[in-house]
Amino acid sequence: MKKIFKAVRNSVISVVLLLASFCTYAGGSSPGLYYGQVPTAGQWNSYFAAKLDYTPGAVNTVPYWDGSGSLLNAIISGDCTAVANVFTCAASSAAVATTTTITDDVTTASTMYPTWVTANTGNLSQKTTSTKLTFNPSTGALSSTNFIGTFAGNTVTTGTGVLTLGAGKTTAFNSTSTWTGTDAQTYTFPTTSATIARTDAAQSFAGAQTFVTVAGASSHILYSTTAPTIASGFGTSPSVTANNGTAAFTVNVGTGGTATSGVITMPAATTGWACKVSPNAAPQAAAIMYSVPTSATSITVTNYTLTTGAALAWTASTVISVTCTGY
Image 1 (tube, rainbow, N blue to C red):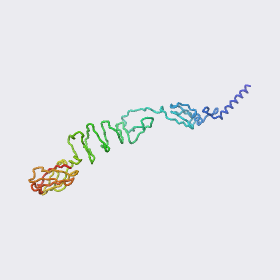
Image 2 (cartoon, rainbow, N blue to C red):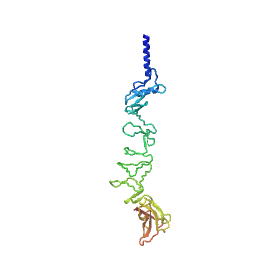
Image 3 (cartoon, rainbow, N blue to C red):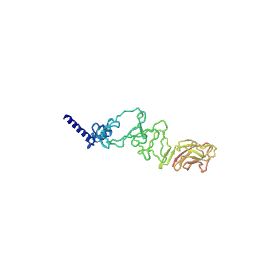
Image 4 (cartoon, rainbow, N blue to C red):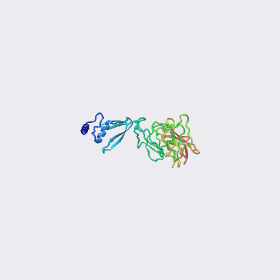
């Protein structure tokens, strides 16, 4: 009887196992495998895709079979869903680094690239540029193709020697402005108009000053440092012997003793030049000299007989003194 009972029991167990082999798991309660079956990677992963227990927003270890039959662990962080055996996990704040390791580097002599993000909150990708903004830790040089803002430091250096301000912009100095260097300093103003002026008092310039042009009312030129030159007339080999631009200059009328007038080339004035002519030494007897503006760039000096107004020849090598003001 014991042998019969044992045989029946084994038969029942076999039938149950056989039926189980034809069952498909439902509701995630069974993997649908029969006794002794080694699941394939697809069967194993399919089962755990539906049965996975994990903590949303935390880091979870998920087992899975790879194609070669090895059981591996995947680290999944965030809130995950499984569709067709594919896990999709949204990143959680617990998986985003909130700090980075900082190293003090003041010696590396190479180009570094500052990083930035596209907003001031949230978890964002860092970005950089290879050509617009760079930094060299060794020299401290921060290079940019453009800058907008206020300089709060003590020194602004331009490597090209040119500091350009946009049209309509103003450079304001609230204290002393000093230009230094071993080379001659040149400050170029627009060709149309430019003004150097204090708004509260008359201008004060210390030391030797050189002004290419000095403007008066309505921006008309008063004086120029450009030296006048002999254009025509006078005697043989006339010359401008000395000058302080148009403000004062001397002319040797040349040799020959027959010339009564000569033309002098002047810098361009707005309209013309009003000039006073006088002898630079003892005056010629019964003679007087006048200057007439013949154009905005020339004057004609003539020697006259004082009593009659007739043209009078200069004595050879007479030196005359001329002062001119533009208008």
